[in-house]
Length: 223
Image 1 (cartoon, one colour):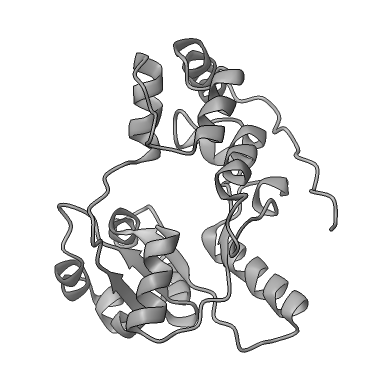
Image 2 (spheres, rainbow, N blue to C red):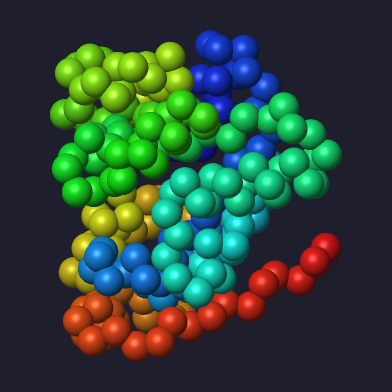
């Protein structure tokens, strides 16, 4: 997703991409999304998957907060972080997502309407197309998306890729191979920690139904 988006922005929109951030969601989000692994595991898997990247960074700010942060807050964090570290205020922070997330922007009760408008107007969205979703139709038929259409970059998927974390978790739970679907070091980490097995999924489900205090993740050492 990140590489596809960067190629599109640089080659077709002539936008210089200086970096990308992955921000694992807070543990409290697991109360809404069943099967979400513990924050420390998600953080480490993201770091393993991107450790060879020259431009993608995994950020732990979001999962270190005391409670779930809305996307608007997370984007504000990145604006401040980039401004501080690069000493620049002219860098745009886009939200990278798939078409399914853009669809959720206009579903009643999912997002705060004022947050959707702010994100679209002040940041912009880089959206990767997905099978079964017409981005052009979605944008045209929804007022808030159409009004901010110039800030929505519709990125074509040159080679359709339907691999998703949900499908990968299900394959692991059923005992099927995920070789070549994700990074080998991430696969080794999953096996070592017995993540997404039947037992682990039952544990996650139990914690969703009977939440325990959030595990705080220590910040990474300053380089």
